[in-house]
Each structure stands twice: as C-alpha cells, then as structure tokens.
Image (cartoon, rainbow, N blue to C red; front, top):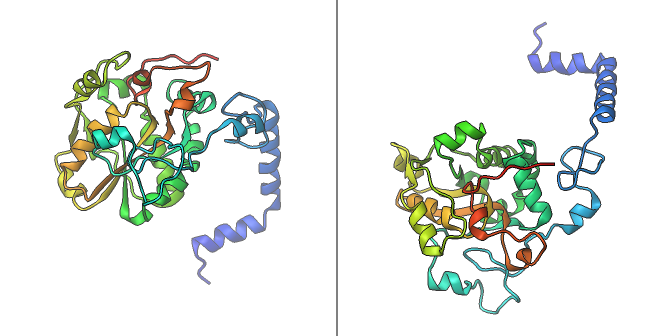
Amino acid sequence: MATTTGDVEETGAASRPWLRGLRTTGRAIVDYALPPRCPGCGAIVGEDRQFCLTCWLSLDFLAGPACSHCSIPLPTALPGGPIACGACLASPPPFDRAPAAVAYGPVARTVALRLKYGRRTGHARLMAQLMTRQLAELGAADDILLVPVPLHRWRLWSRGFNQAALMADELARATGAPRDHHLLLRVKSTASLRGKTRRERERIVAGAFALADDGKARATGRHIVLIDDVHASGATLRAAAKVLRRSGAARVSALTWARVVPDALMTSNIIDFASLDSDMMDQTLTG
C-alpha cells in the first residue's frame, strides 16, 4: 500500500520515542554548557530569545497616544481622531505611518547593537516577534510588502549581513507577509550623520536610494512597509520612502524595533540622534 511522505515521517516519529528522548537530553546538555541568556543583560534565562524580568519590565512598549505619522508619543490623546505632531505638521514625512515596538532605551539599544555589531543574528527573531502587533495594525499581511532598508554593498560586504533584512525575514515568517529584499537599492555610500543638522542630514542621504530596474512593476499599487532597527532622526527612512513614493506604491509605511523619544534620551546613555540613524554609525560592541 502506498504511503505518503508525511505519513512516513509521522509514523516514524511516533514509533521512535527514543529519538524524542535523545533530542530532549541533547537540549539539556547544550543548555547546561551554553545556557540561554537574556539579550539585554546576559543573565541566564529559561528559554532562548527571552528577557529576564528586570530587562522586560524596563522595556517601554509604545502603545499610548502618538503622532499619526511618525509615532512620536504625545502627552495625551486628543479628541477628533488622529493628530500629527508639530514637526510632521510643519514638514509632513513621505511615509503614512511609522510605528515602533519600543522606545529607545538601554535595553532596546543593547539588543539592536548586539544584532548589528555583535553578530547576534538570533536577536532579529526576538525583535520581529515584538513588532508583529504594530505590523498587524498597519494592515492585512497579504496586502503588505516588507522592504528592508538596504545597505550599500561595501557596508554589506564588511558586515556580512543586513540587520533590517534579517528582521524582515523573521516578520515574514511570523506573519506570512511577503518580502522583497531587492526592490530598494542603496546606490550611494553615505558619510556619518553624527552631529549634523537636519538640513545636512537630508543632503547627505539625498540620492542614496534607488529602485531596482523592474521596481515600478513590483511596487505599483502595493502597501510597502520599510523595515529598520532604529528610528532616530528619520532622515534615512524619509529618503527611502521618497523613492518608494515615486514608484507608484499605494501606501508607504515604516516599521522599526525602537523609536528614539525624548524620555529615552533622558538617561545616562544619551546618544546623538544622528549617530543612531539606520546604519550610519560605525560602532564596535564589546562585552
């Protein structure tokens, strides 16, 4: 009698309980030798990609009143529906919305830097898991196209991976949303934005992005969601969104792991907005 591959795998697994026992024992040995650690502080925890209680409680999840465009937190909700902050009213961004999972703070910063510079690529899954709620609020997964903010080829060769692409992959895996790594290209290597004024930052990133040759056909009519790790000054996201707007996309949004907000800067770990902007900062993580 013919048997499907799925039946063979299911029957084999059921008839070999020793294999499950071996896997459990092997996991216990690995956990003893290399126990799971909190991505925020390094303390031993019960499972992979799990924060310790102290780090979890220190994360500031962004779920309150916020600007309808850039998602900067607002003091109180105002009547009359969505409202923009003063900066977005003065200079509307080219993206429709830009939510983030958490406010930028010591733990959120450590997780992002360990992914980007410490090569802890598993952190991308953790970050994506905490970004799925914001992605669902942007729209149905089938209507969204995830596009990671690209690195210039020299930066990609030196780092070995694009952290935004890893996050987009994990978001796609968790939600079923399609992704396109090559719709948006970084065609110009840019100087550091550290210490620059807003006008200088805009000038530096101008012309840094371009569509792929068949980009318009792939983007027309789509709701594109840019993926990046940190939303600081927003210069990189605005430059990328402008290019996607010209592609014929129906909507352009941005989704990030962490958003720099005033409260996050009022800590002992004060960082210049510009130095945090996307991949514009060269930093070596130690410890």
